[in-house]
Length: 113
Length: 115
Image 1 (cartoon, chains in turn green, yellow):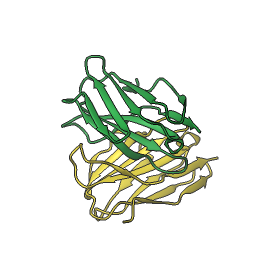
Image 2: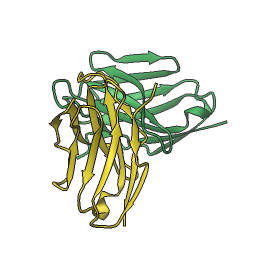
Image 3: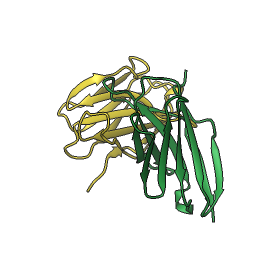
Image 4: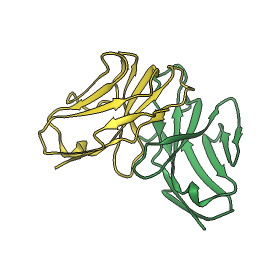
């Protein structure tokens, strides 16, 4: 039973355009959400996060949107750059529970020059 | 500063062999996590330490898996009598404190292949 779902295994966009990566979750106890970026042969690196009390968080070219009623979040990258090509993982965590992150399967983003 | 390091980076084991995977967290980090990432999947939680105390081991798939962090810094994940289904990348992560908002910093992982 997958609690965090990333239904698109891959996404391809042109340089300069917007990349939108989607994530759905089923556990209503999740109250903090994170996006991690992973290059081959490296560990995931933290990108951006959002608390459930917010619906938007922005950091430079990266914006995360949270729709609690739909149990959906998305990561927007504007403008996309070739260096953004990586696998992006959505993760969730529950306050007051275990500290473990629950990850989706990831979406491989390719930004074409 | 130095990040999280893991060794070995690659390990090939024969089925039935015991293996030990090492994690050196960022100096001063209180929390340490182990995750298992199978091919094409996201990382899955195995176990969590706060200093030397193992607070959650609910993700360990069987009693063949054992983790320790005796002095609250370096951690070792041991897998006894390895099976082919243990083949995966084992990721270690650490964070400053045990608050869930604290960013977890990941090491590069150990890729284990069991033949």
